[in-house]
Amino acid sequence: VESNSIKFPESELICVMAKFGDIPVYKRVILFMIIVFIPMFARFIPLSLFNSRVMEYLVALSKKVAHMRKTEGVRRNDFLQLMVEHQDDSNAPSDDVIKVKTVTVGENGETKQKVFLSEDTVTAQSILFLIAGYETSSTLLMFASYQLSLNVDIQDKLRAHVNEILDKHGGKCTYEALQDMSYLEMVLNETLRMHPSVARVDRHCTLDYTLPDTNIVIRAGESVNVPIMGLHYDPKYYPDPYKFDPDRFLPEEKAKRSPYVFLPFGAGPRNCIGNTTWIFSEMSENK
Image (cartoon, rainbow, N blue to C red; front, side):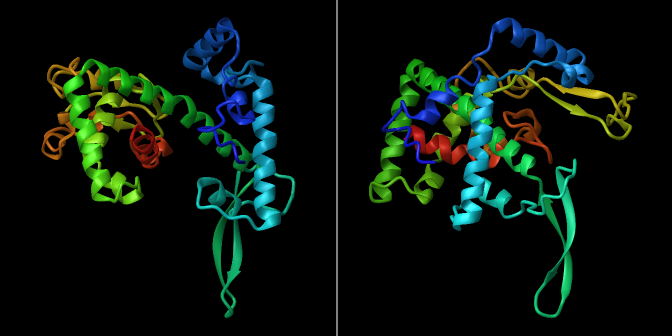
C-alpha cells in the first residue's frame, strides 16, 4: 500500500483511519463500562469501539496485501511479512488461531515443529498493529511539542543535539544517527512519563502469588490493576513529578529506580509490541 501520507495527507488510507473511532460517545461509554466491570459479557454485546465500515475496509485491505505478498513474491522487512511466512495455507476448517505442525527440514528427513497462524489471526494482528500505533504516535508527538513549547531551554538543547548528530552523519537521518540521538530519546521518554497512552494496565493471575514481604495473596483467576499514571507521578520515584525534566532518563538516574515504575508499554512477556519499534518511528518524525 503506497499511502505516501506525508505528501498526500488526503490519501484513501489516511482518510479511512481518521474515521476509525467515529462512533457515538454514548456507545463508547457503555462498552467501556462493560469491558471494565463485566468483561465476561463484552463478547455478547453487539457494540464496537471502532467504526464498522472502517474495520471492513481494513480487513479487506489486510487480506489483499497478504495475498499479494504470497502470490507475487513481494517481500518487505516488516511485521506483516513475518506473519505471512507463518500463515497456514491448508484452508482446513479450524477454530484454532495458532497451529503447531511437524514439518520436514533438510535433505536427511529431519523433522521439527513449526507454528502456523490462521488467516484471521494474521488479519487481526495486522489491523491491531496499525490501530495501536496510529493515534498513540500522533498523541505522543502532540504532547512532546506541547512540552517543548513550554520549556524553551529544553527545546533549544534538543535542537542543538539533533543538529550535531545529523552533522556527524553527513546530514542524513539514518538508523545509526537515530541511535546516537540520546537526548531526543530522553525527551520522548519524559513525555511518555507525563502523558502515557494508557493510565493503567490489567493482568489476569494464572497462579496463586504472595506479594513479597506481605501476607497479601493474589489468587488464580483474579485480575490485577497496575496504575501506570500513579507510578509515573509518584514523587518517591520521580521528585517534583509535574516538572518536565528529560534528565530523569540519564543512565545514572534510571539506575536508581526500578524499571517497573516506567510503564508506558507495560512490562513482561505481554508488554506492548510497540516497545521495540516506537522509538525509531517517533525519533525520525521528531527530527
